[in-house]
Length: 148
Image (cartoon, rainbow, N blue to C red; front, side, top):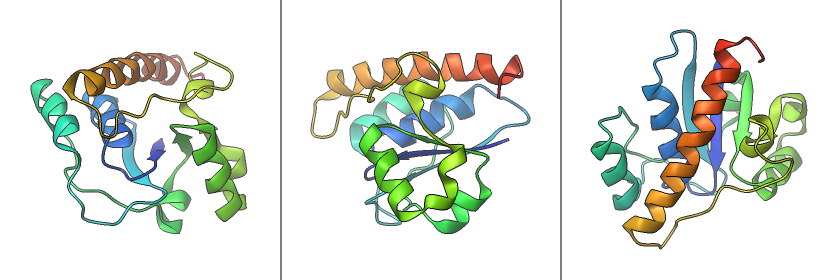
């Protein structure tokens, strides 16, 4: 199972989500993250890096742009917002059947966005990290129960 986590710049939300899910050690799950407006090779935000390192999780320290190769690789594409999903489907309509917002996929909300901590302080990032942790727990549950 290949999961592709998508946000805007791949410096805050999706790298944190990637690290959290990767830390769940789901043997049959590979995870990557990328950004719709990302540039390859930019460092992730300092606050995201701080929280990931505090939790002692493996992570990818550099941003990646969404790519056709990544979308083809993915079994499931999870976006942080409805706007990300809409833009992704506009650019890559062929991934419609496997693209969802993260919150709708883990059934926390029908339509909801993950809080964007960009530009915020460490506490703002900590809130988003907590929100993502809850969603990754639910995603792990769905994966281990064979609901995916």
